[in-house]
Image 1 (cartoon, one colour):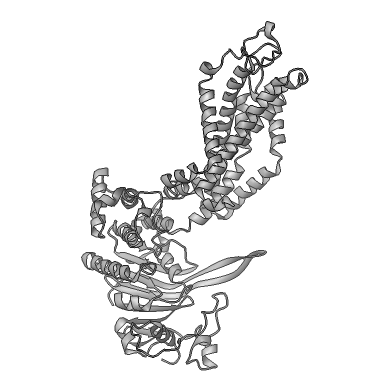
Image 2 (image 1 turned 135 degrees about the vertical axis):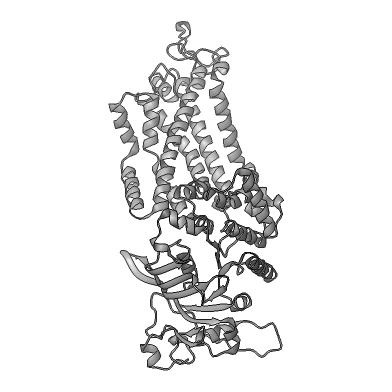
Length: 320
Length: 278
């Protein structure tokens, strides 16, 4: 692999909950994540709700300080940068959020909203910025006349386009898309995914694409990472998903993808129950209480390492 | 929450509209006092002392023969000034401290909120009384002291709004763009936190007017001969049995004013969030 655009090394984040008498228990949201994205690729991150995907996104964008570990962007350690250095790096990495209703300031017109990135970084004159906003709107499939409207005058899909335009404004190298389509109708999902793919080819963007929906991920991404309770349990090229021989959790997620064929026989859900509370992570392999293949006592006692089982394919399971 | 929608809901609320009309009327009266008042409020006419309401003096005259209606009209200027300046001051302080506490959190928040608790422990009216007793009683001192002792509610409101807003995705997006703390607060958080502050400020005006009237009634507020509703009540209480109009009309003026600000404030609150109606 060429030198990574983004790399995390043993990244941890814990939250201290408030208890009735002050400090409560500690929640581990991200536990020792090692991730490397090379320039131009689309890396998909899947996992159930609450597995730490969004926390990881916020850590990578330096919106939240990690408890421990390192984040490197284009060779620079984000945690060692001063204010000005961090601001310069922020131009190169942006985020698209899930909820198109809360990700746009309801009191700013589209023009103000899209102009803001340039204002923050002191780019262009007023007239230039106006022109750039119009360009951005066209780029994401909206009309320049939309500039004087407020976010609430748009539909969900249009608002997501505005979020993409804002992320695109500074011509970043990396865009973290945190569940960018899961709040949208299926028909609109495809439009937004196509738009993201187009922009990637045009600007050579690198995407970190986060979703709980493996069907969306396998459509859009070249590599897939699977998270469970804050840990990466599998990193695989997309092609490996079809070949099988995966982490039991990934297999269960794949089986859960609905197939659009009513003739198929009913398949019982592969996974029972909810993920355990991240406050009480099971001993050994964190997946063992729900794993159909768990073999005691090893799975209960020993935390599996993320091992390479094929080129570019790493799995954290004792039996793969 | 947008302007048109807000106005449509507000307009349908009859009580709120009454409040708005009365408040607006009060503004007109105090600004146009020199033209509206039939007499000079300080003009002493010893031939017309303690006259009951009549065609010449609609609301009667006081023990120095001054026209009560004219004095009430001029007194509204005091109420308006006190209401707006002291609430303006309190709102500014509350916005500032609440923003800082809610945005930065941690020990800054802890210290500021303990300061709020401390300030709320004082019975504020007696604090004001004590301060005014030391300083000389003047309308400016009253406004400043009321302002300095009534910002805590606003600070708490703004802090609470900030705590929920600062995790919202549009704020994170602005942060990811590299926005400074000042820009985040000023452009993204404050504009979205203002609605409840408007309500509390409107209600605060009513409270400030009441406090000023009480202080003036006790002789620690606006000093005679400048007319204020509070000091007119003081003068009236000595001749309550023989000249009811000296107490009743300034009292009614206070009542109606406070009531209309409260109606307006409640109306704004309901129009902002119709769910609060019940």
